[in-house]
Every structure is written in structure tokens, then in C-alpha cells.
Image (cartoon, rainbow over all chains, first blue to last red; front, side, top):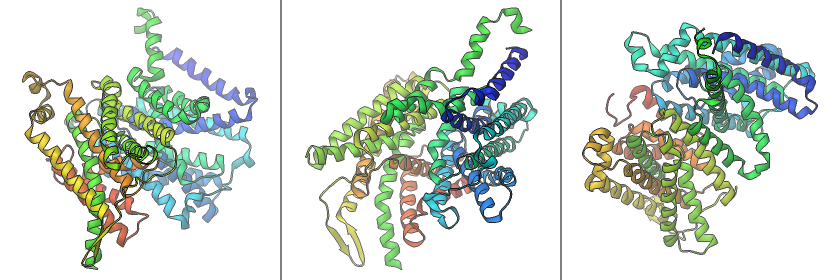
Length: 314
Length: 287
């Protein structure tokens, strides 16, 4: 695809998203849209490690939890202003990611996935049991909200951050670092063979993706005003993976579309009630078997088919 | 103190046996097909649930319910292989893993729909407690340990001594050469899935009899199973046996002496330490 139509699509999408709160009459949809924007941040982070580097991490929700609890607890105990706590949340998450990424990245493929999943379990166990600090399973309520809880203002705040971080992900992907990340996904041994320390780039991708998740977690905490350990369990980490797969792994638009899907799809499946989990799993299996390139991948190949041959090279 | 350590070690052997059975199933599927079969735990729990249902709902004796549960479990394993894993056989390995995650959701959802949210315990009627010196040993735990040993031995004999077992090992060793030698490679995945699911269901029944089955238990168990593989060395049978036993005993001692709330954390910390010091696992071959 040529660059210009893609750019027009992006501007169009941003305009639609900016106009959304003025159009939506049902307050609940605004609520879901804010959650979806927070998930855009998380999914863009997941895409950096899963889509570009080829390492499926299953700890994203755990990192969201670290971001959410960091921001909340620092505000609660040290009385920092809300903006400062949100800003420091990804940095604290990055420290955890450095410590966990080093051992995890010593194994590849599935085993990396399993080790990160174990970290997610550990994070939840600690959040549940270290109740002197985290108040355990009951969770923390009355977390301060900016703009005294005005949803529309928070929507634009989340939209700005989601857009900026999507842009940052795009820039990272196009940089030399991004190229090396892609090369690692395709052939890690070759990367090492040409004298590039692959582990540095893997760790970089892992830590950045954790920072996205940490910020997403902090945004979640100050939007909902309530957090507990269950919210940051493995199931939510799977949602981050699903967002990337459904939207289009290794693309920039994919995780953004996927994030909206994982927030709105369960709402649409509400009719299925008890069968929701089964249906959700089925969608994941079918999507992986029949459309592993995701919605964006399919859109791209359809667009390529309808583009005249000369224009494609232009 | 010494008695207490000995007691916890024996306690750990039973859960260690469960881990060994789960890990053997996972390691066979991984070693031969290269699939991280994440749905293994949830499918194993379906077998446990089914046993419970047959015993309490249908009034079957436990010994009659177990073979039925094993058969249904094996069938489920074959279906999963044919319908879900076979289509992604030649795709990127990540795809098979994501399919496995989706399957896990489906099986967990199915378990919830069929058997409910409540935790269930399979009634075995084995309540006697054996005392030896200062050590106590529930009769049930002894049977679980014995059953685990028998199953592991049966599987080792099958893989080492029979022609089918040789074919399986041949495919694991060198797929192309095995095809050239006339091994039916379409059948191997089915046999492997059938065998590992049977071991898994046996483990699920043990969990249901020793502790309880509840939503989420299967997922926790499969993660432990993978921790055992990492501990023992990927694709290694002796590694899975050693790793599972070590993990069971470590957890039991940690729960007794440190904290039961953090026993899972301790298991994972052991796994991570092994990764740092010996990434190929205790008995794994150096890469």
C-alpha cells in the first residue's frame, strides 16, 4: 500500500474517535470506549514484543497491575499529585520488567510464554497475599479520578495518550531497533550470527511493552476508581494477545482495532451468557486457524488486489 | 524436626506424582509435535469432573467410573488434535500456542457449563490412615503414589519396548527419516495425544480425590507442568519424572515451613533459578 491513503485513513479514524463522545448518546458506550482506548495502549505494547519481536508474553495484565497499584499506592501513602503518580507508574513497571525479562528471555518460543505466565501468576499471588500493602482480594476503592470523574475529559485524555503511544510504536517499528526486532522474529540465530546482541533488543522490546502496560494499568485505576488483584489475572493477559492477533500482529493499526474488539466483543456476546467463554475461545481458535494475519492483514491483501499493478509500485 | 521434614516429603510425593503425570503428557506432546499443549490441564480436569459426576450422579463405583473417564478423555484429546492442532501444524509455532490458549478457554467454559462453579471432591471411601513411627500416611495418598508409579512405568515400557513406541521416538528424533522408514506419521500425533490425555485424566482424577477440582485448577496445574518441564529439561522423560517429584516435595516442605500462601511462588522461583543457572534444565542436554 502507498503511504498517502494510509495516512488519510489514520486522520479519518482520529477524527471519528474525536467526535465520538459528541455522538454517543448512551453513557455506557462512552465508558466502554475509554476502556478500549486504555486497551489500545496495552495492545500496542503487547504488539511490540509479540507482533514485532515474535515473543508471546503472557504477563501484560500483571504489568498493568504493577502500574495500577504503583500509581494508587504512591498517591495514597506519599500524597503525590495524580499526574506524577501516573507518570511514575510505567517507570516502576520497567524496573520489574528488567528483573523478570532477564531470566525469561533466556528461553524461547513457548517456554518464554510459560515463564512470563508464571510471572503473571506470581504478581497476582503477591497482590492477594501482601494485604498490608495491597488490601488483598478486597482491593482498593476510592482511587482519585482527575476532572472529578468527568468521563468526557478522561476520554480525550486517554485518546491523546493512545494516539501518541501508537505513533511512538510506529516510530519504533520503523527505526533500526524495530528492524532488528523484526529480524529476531524471522531468524534469531541469523541476527546473532551477524554480530548483533539480540538479547539487548529483546529486553528493550520487553521493557517498553511493560511500560505501555504499566501506563495502561495506571490509566485504568484512575478511570475506574477501584482495583483488585483479579482484574490483573492471566485472563486479561490473554485479552492483550487476542487484541494483537485479531487486529493484525506486527501491524500498527491492528492492535488499535483489536483493542476495541476485545472490549466490545464480550459485550456483544452478552446474549451467550454462560457460553461466552466457550464462544470467545472458539473465536480465538478460528481466528488463528483461518485468519492468522488479522483484520488489518486481510484488509491489506484486499486493498492490494484492487490496486492497479502500476500504482502498487508507485 | 527431622520427622516433620520426612512427613512433608511423603506428603509432597503424592502431589509430585500428579505433577509427573501432567508433565509426562506435556513433554511427549512437546517433544514429538512441538506443541505447548496449554489446554492439557483443563482437559485433565474435565476427566476428573466426569469421574465425580459418574460416581455421585450416576452411582457408579469409582473403579468403574475411572475407565469411562479415561476413555472420554482420550477421545477429547484425539478431537483436539484433529480439529484444532492439525490445521496449524505447519504454521508458526506461536499459532499453535494461541490455539491452545483458545482451547483452554473453551474447555474451561465447557467445564463451568457442565459441572458448575462449586468445587468438587471425588468420594473414594478410602479413609484409613496408616501410622508408622511418627509419620502418618492416609491410605488414599499411598494408592495415588502407587498408581502414579504404575502409570509412569507402563508409559516407559510402551515408549521403550513396543514397536509403536519406537515409531514415536523415531519421529521425535528425525521426522523425515522416520517417514522414509515407513512410519505412519499421520497416526503418531493421535497416539501421542491419546496417551498424554489418558495420563492427564488420571492426574485429574487424583487431584479430585486428594484435594478438589474447581474452575481454574487445570490452568494452575498446566503451568506447574510446564515449570516441571523447564526444571527437568524440555522433552526429557527422566527430567519430567525428577522435576515433578522435586517440585512436589519442595512445595510441600515450603508450605509446611515457610508459608502455604506463597508455596506457588516458591515453585516458580525454583523454576526461574534453574533457568538462570542451567537454562537447559536439570537433565536436559546442553544446546
